[in-house]
Length: 147
Picture 1 (cartoon, one colour):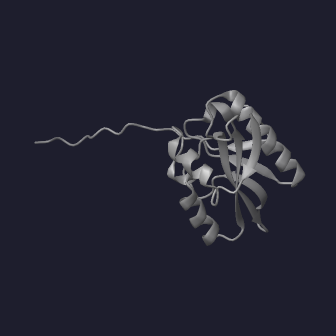
Picture 2 (cartoon, helix red, strand yellow; picture 1 turned 30 degrees about the vertical axis):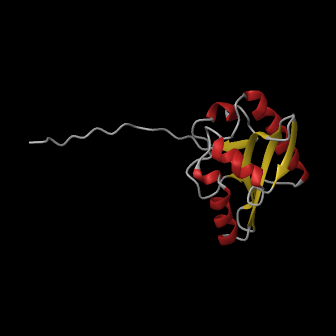
Picture 3 (spheres, helix red, strand yellow; picture 1 turned 180 degrees about the vertical axis):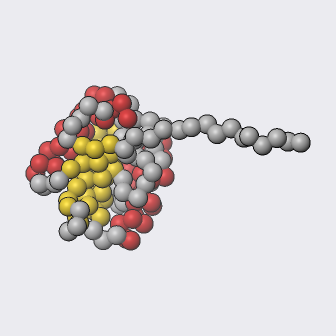
């Protein structure tokens, strides 16, 4: 298992990985990320990935490096999205990726890291060096009568 970074917009392996992962969403797809990068020049796409022994993607977390004079420099997974789960299958995969994210954060003197998990909140809770948005779902009931 080897951790590396990639540009998720131009990496064909990332596209295939996202399209086949059970926790993926439209927000992690290269086309969505490309639209953001073209629209907002202060956003730079970046993904931290685990490669398996056959050099295939095993896990990953997409980010944008946000460089804002107003709000600072930070990693966000992902801006302008409702949620973005880490694409992992285990806590071990998340921890391996998170170590690299922290190293990158330290080397680049970033202000903070932000995740927006929906289903993968369990991987993120307890890490004090980042912020996480919490989401919940409610079931709506129709109160209209049919008669």
